[in-house]
Length: 537
Image (cartoon, rainbow, N blue to C red; front, side, top):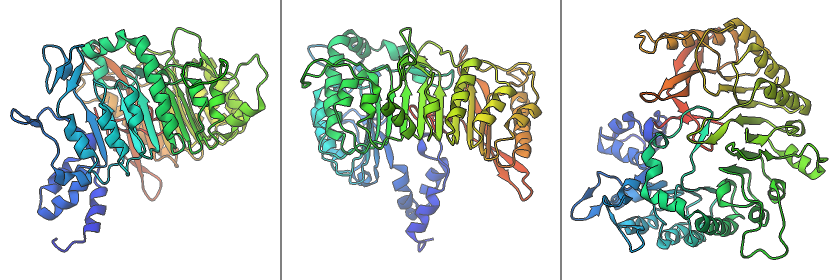
């Protein structure tokens, strides 16, 4: 083994399955086997790291940082400060200033190390305090940095100091943004009342008016600096306005994700010149000439729904042309869907979600609304290959057949019920199979079929057995199918439940008969809507 080529070792290690935290127990065991294997595993073990760690501290030095010998391996650095350290009376690794604002110690350790990480290409900040200007300046000097994420972190003018790093991907999410998609999996911390009752978050909410203006202006200047190089932007509507976005050119942006609440349409920037004007989303999209993937992920509120195309106003040909140029489109039920999809002639991927602010539950599309959407898709004659949709009513073979008729080229289909529950199904496996059989290219199927209700404490796990039998049935009936999943209701606490998926990979044999292999729990890491990944929870 001592003469085994290092490149071969890297190839073998890269094929190991990833588990929670992106590190597998197999990889840890392999790294302990010998010095050679340890050296080969280090780039994988420390490619993504978090700091600080509660257990990595001592009384003499306080918080400890990663040894300098590991810095060359770090590609993704997460500064994730524990917000319980900021609670009055329990302050740790920091102090409260005269205004009662938490100020951290040891942040200089990260600032010193960041500029000495030669392969650092992504940084994620999540801190219960304003990151110091020195931190942003250090990030701006990282030549390899191309992705930056700011989540649940206060923003001020210091953000503008993250320059001249050439960023291609940016995600800005404000403090306290908690969204529910359907009734599926959410971050467990959002289920704890302590998340919302932390002292620093209460102070943050109390300064909403002053803070909101400051954060929007700082975000606008920061985005304007990096707009020429950005290819992927995930932005909360609470941190921007349509006016500021439309005042900037985005020549290389191919993916644009708007989440949170609908952005402000009024002029709020101090550097804006001229009379007040009202702009809309299409004014922003006009500045994105190569945009392919647009996601409007707004939670539904009591106020009026977001209107993309007004049905009472003749559509502008330029707006219709922009819709026609999109190949991927994700939208929530907070948006009016009437008359949108029949203009999207080049659409290949579509997601329609039900979203709301926690702790409320969303109401998804009714059967009548789904039928109208499918009719519009069919009228557009687009070659739709990927469809993910959240529905409110019980799934029937009739809906599956409508999907097959209007979307005959589908390769990926996911139909999720918001608030799934088992019960007596009025339709058989065969009826659903017959409805989906026209989809001759279907390779990935997730479906919210209803199964008989079983006792949760059943030692034989009958609920799982019956889904595996159904998976085998679909594998035999749909010869192109490579993966199949079924929705079920999962207990997440004493009185809490949420929707989840039981997925199987179909291993095809010589005669097309499929052997099933169950996959680990999967979820969509927001705002991702196309490809699920292994759940970290």
